[in-house]
Length: 323
Image (cartoon, rainbow, N blue to C red; front, top):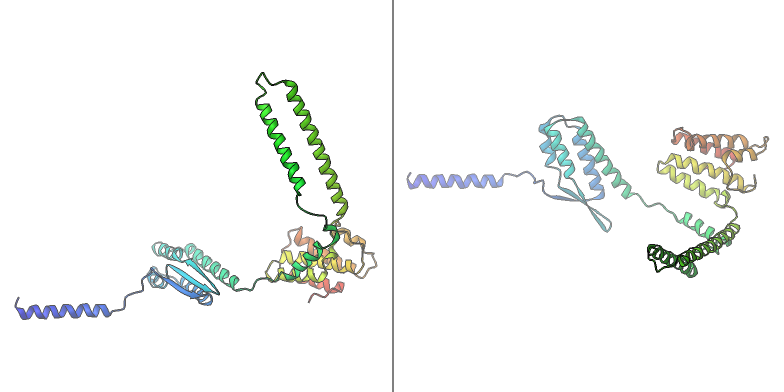
């Protein structure tokens, strides 16, 4: 081959290399996407749409090129690293063996990630009203003498533990002939006396505390407006069973605050019904409210928005505003 031909061949090779370098290469999958929370949610929606339209294994490589190894989601002052390898593995498995169950699993996981992202965006629940109510209850006189173990209680506990350890050593060495049986029996009697005295003091102190807190707090100690707010909050979370339960106690607190009966937290729902006279205008509404509550709380009736709306309607009939 002459010098001229070698020069032409070398020139042709250089041109080919230059053209290849200018060709756009596919995005390497080994990367991390940095996204904001709304962008992350949109990307999940986009991937869910793409995987939902899959019909041929040949479509998988195009989707894989759009999936990173992980997503780095930036929020206000925080960053989360969310792996995406599970999605790549799932699509690769479907490419080898197309199976609708695999696609359903991928769609479920994408929906779960999206729900978690939306939940993180939601504002935290305001528990200030409940905290203020708890502080008012704990500030009552019946809680003034309620406290944890005192130094005297801890001293008693240590003395009992020491006595038990001494008895254990004595029993372990009781086979030694030098230890008198009288000493062993004496220690047993002393331990029983100390234990009996400790039990007597414990029962006596417990009885004093029970006398101090004779009965649990009545339902009306929590205002009916607080019950209603908690019921609305539970309904907002889609927790219909708790919402109906709280709506029922809202009605009981409303009637109790109005003097329908003497407060007593130990009553059952049926006992509350029997307290109203047959001629009471509130009896039909309370009966329906109770029946709806019992079906959901104790029975097998489905708890849903319709059942919660029925409870609100009965509260309105009682004269308890539900808005």
